Image (cartoon, rainbow, N blue to C red; front, side, top):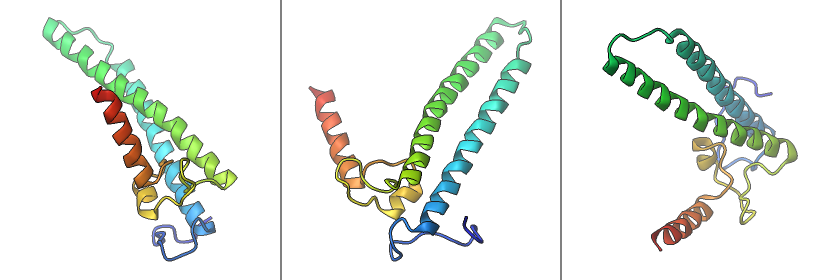
Length: 137
């Protein structure tokens, strides 16, 4: 594991996906996943506590809307957990940090901003452009 993790930050100058970088991204992904799981537990507890009756119809409607929004957010985060798990598996099997489309290295800057990235910035832009073309037709 990384010694003094708070001071280490990967750079483009060091060997790509060396031991320190892999440990850095593994820790970043695990921390992110644990934060999501903690938030999900907090949401469940809050929803269970809020099961009281609202005397006012508008209060009840507002509460139901808030719950629906919160549950949609949690569902998106649930999907994010599977992407985090997939990224952790790629670290394990040595494919983390490489574009699934081109096999090129994904920049450290992009991985730091989006540690679940599977495409290089260029490949992602091509993908989004194709998506837009098909959506506009």
